[in-house]
Image (tube, rainbow over all chains, first blue to last red):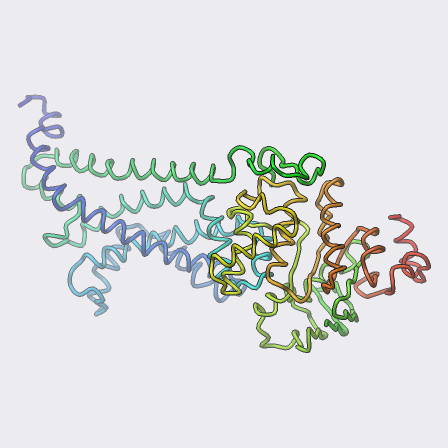
Length: 262
Length: 240
């Protein structure tokens, strides 16, 4: 054991080694579950919110605008306390007395506020002619959104979305303020217990490594998906079928233009 | 097939259509010509309710489509539209561009939709590019795919909104050839165009719009050889 106080307090190998199994056995799954469910809630809210924000009627836009402004403007911990402590205290208990459901709801509501704006910008980035073309074929507004607008918009907002998902994973740590019960404790909650139990800060290093093990692959995974979609199929070398085209070079209209033409 | 009566359309204080009257018989090809800002495109977009008329009446195949409560999507499925900028869906293959509405709107099984789409693409000579993304096609090819996409729905009427205006000159011919074939085959067509050659050769009637009204209408020979309206005379002298 080193005598250096910095190493003893923060990089204490014994404490770190002792903490990891506890984090990996329970905390990491609960953190992943809270984050995943929150993102799900956030995406659903975000899609609906974005469509409301894009309405031509002001009274449809207003509630969405207020929701976005409030939950992007509030500190995360305030929202978590209001949802996780305030709502049950007021008699609104859709998830009973266990804090887990409220934790998911709180992080999801915050995520939804950011994703509403992200999705709105993605939808607006798609050329208006796309909606016109889809509607002119007889598609409903929702079908056109689902088949034509959202798939195109989502490619442009993938980096922003990935960033939001990373943020959701990190912010899920703040649900510790709700006091999670044994079995549903997240990474940070366990780390904090260990800090108190060992009088040592090394569990924070261990938990930090766990968060990075989630967030860094997530970031790179989204980046890879982004690249794959950008270079998607049909963007490769010229089609082989073109050479067999009898009209081929004589008809200028049949010549495939090299490079992407918009 | 289509009867337009006293059609008005305003955007705020700007009145774009000021009482248009026009009838299009089944199988007829009508060209709409006129200077930009004369209301041609707006008129076209009113026919499939992409724009809501401010007042007036449009009757399509016995159905007054300007009445409230008309099923807009069902109406549009019967009216094909081709746009100036093609508006193909860039994230789908050429084949899926043509097939997507067959599945989503016509409720066709996927495999049959793709067969139908491939047949339509063959009709415009592009079935060999079915697997490509639209971005790899030339403008002329893209517009032919867009025509195939509209035709696949087996519409009763086809609307063309300056379908060749965004094309390089050498690509215009191929698209016009398809439009002429379509006109000869008995399709009812309303064509907003700057291609006077097409209006003259392929349309049954030419409509000259000016200031949001139909200023003069008649068979191509009359419009191009002996125009009465002074604005039409000036318009023709400027472009021919």
